[in-house]
Length: 268
Image 1 (cartoon, rainbow, N blue to C red):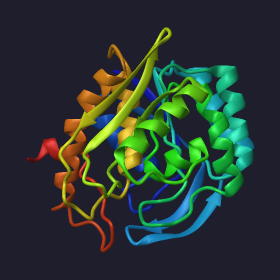
Image 2: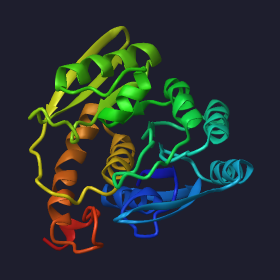
Image 3: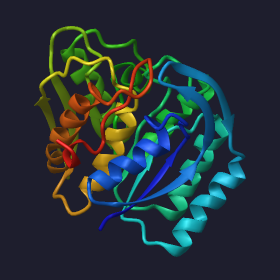
């Protein structure tokens, strides 16, 4: 059973952040552990407050887990403040778990800001010390210092640029593109050979996408344990994500952008 450490903020409505991570890891057959970076005040209708956990407390939580448990994979989500981004980067250099996935959280699905401007800038410097980064289209633009891509071909160019600049594998998720395309973009290298793949998916017509980025990244971290590569992990995770999006249509949680049904396969 993969032992997966998730580093994220809370969401009291349960759809995003650390609670979504735990559900996703469990759905992929892993054992989830969680370090809290911030306590948010939010629900499916929006974020109204963010209260950061002191940096030294976050690092102490990380060390407590790493001193006791062998970590097979790690997912990094909401960091919020620049000082925490720097501290997590230093911790990764010092402890370096395997299969580290960074979800570069900047803005919630419901529109609330979850990272300061300085933190968003420093996230670019964190990418080289992780194994995979999973930006959505606006986050990808920030990571490569460009405007938000309006179409798939620009997403491909930006994903290749981030990979070239950082060496990290990049999975650009494109659910928020409006050009009619339906392909995620995976860029990774084996030795000196770079591979760019357009990965087709079937769009689910749903307003309930709260926590999709959190859920995908933590599921990928779990699935990567024992998989040959990120492509194999993605191919295992994507059908589960599709089912979770469909399940969210009838979940009836909240009055805004509702969550996914992480356990849809248990009661279909």
